[in-house]
Image (cartoon, rainbow, N blue to C red):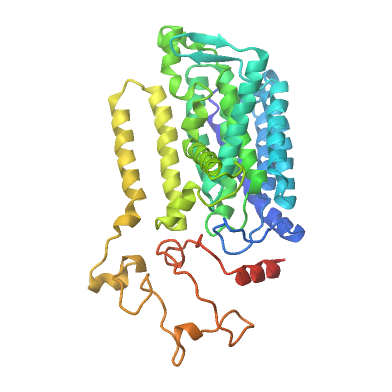
Length: 461
């Protein structure tokens, strides 16, 4: 068996190409059937945007599995393991639930039940956690019920973590792609580097997940032409969880003794990305933190944990002054830092320079995070060469310094309103904070004009 790098690369390219090519027709289909709901209070986009992008992503998943099943270095994974079939069964079920939710807005409890059923379907076909490596103790075998409950919990947590973070254009797909890339490096090292064949299915899942996200991102970057919807966010969350379950709790630490000296040392060496309850938090730490904060916040306010609001991390980035694109890039940065930092630490846990690099990058991330609080002002002579947010404020201008002057004989309060309402007076609007709207390319998350949104929604239909 040769090194399967080219086979993985081919699988990645096919998955990405199929997802990319299917997204355009899926967008037209979503518009035709009306799967583009009106603007909601918590949304950050201004115009109704079609959903159902998960249909194209599921097509890429199927294409990737079909191609991998016919490649010389990967076909044995399908012959010796039932995990690819288990993944496809669970993914099909969760994808169908997501499609129904994107079109008909089904109840949150029904979705939660569907997620648990999809996880149980994978467990019944062999994709489950068999044992846990615990530091200082060694390998602890799990009973069938313990393994099932832990597997279902991991799947549900990961799905909802990805679903909660899907609030900005390209955010969920990019963060999951980063997590999948880090996870691929770890599992590929286990399989090809240490010849542990039990890590091969997880490596395949990570490659296919990267292809799904990379193929969808060109259509989903700001300004997005289509959203993945719950059919896409729950799907990629399930695939990510399936990879974690496949390698964690199924790779016996006994096989690592020859590399670490003893079972206890092997367990300690692989700890950062080995324990199932810790792995989702290291690979998708940002979505998991957002999930926990959302549940605590809503419960503290007397709301249901499933009630939607505008308190997510990406909303807060917009509120403090970051643009839409910069907020997404900051979330990418922190996801990559945590995911690749955990994988690097698992490889060389005794190396001091890895800790120093992580600390240095964290400092850079904090500086980028607080940039709007310390916005520099360019000299007067250089103002024409810099974006408006770096210019000095002028007397008689708006907050951003870019408010166009009123037409001759027209007062600011006497401007015409919407098209078709000539002569009407537009109601007074709340000033928009610099960096949240127009100036930096992001959309406002504050109060919207209901009339404007209703006209846009009706015209889109």
